[in-house]
Image 1 (cartoon, rainbow, N blue to C red):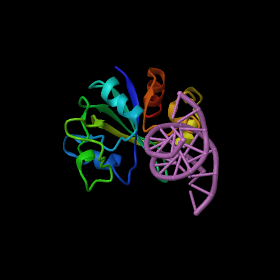
Image 2 (image 1 turned 135 degrees about the vertical axis):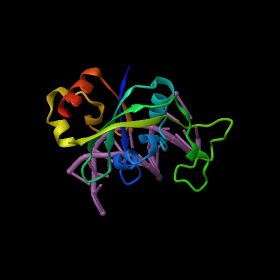
Image 3 (image 1 turned 60 degrees about the horizontal axis):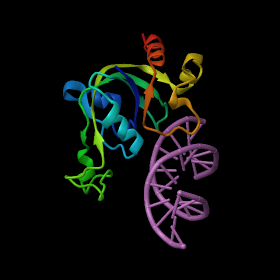
Length: 152
DNA sequence: GCCAACGTTGGC
DNA sequence: GCCAACGTTGGC
């Protein structure tokens, strides 16, 4: 069992959007970074814990607890010419991009960036490091426990 | 809108 | 394989 932080732009897919989905499940499409892709395709397992994070918005931070709900499979948006995420280097035979499904377990209060930064036990979190841009980062068991405690 | 940080591309 | 140029992310 591992833990992850996954960023989404709420103007694209917000925690409320996912809460409104059937089964509260969404394909985590649009990841176009090899390291983040590899986390999904090589390291995630069904049932792993996920911190649902809103980025590029007025109040960035953790907004929900979720879980990995499927193994990785080809991201359909890479084949869609009309999609912002279309990739002409990708073919059905050799897809470059994969995604897992993520199921929202529960929406939480906003645990915003300032509060994360103000919590000494969370100083190790990748998302708090200067210059971090990765949209998917591993979270340690200790960090996960501290965050679920703050959200209890 | 600014800018720091980082990833990718492509010429050599 | 190096590295400059360029593009993107994402907080502020």
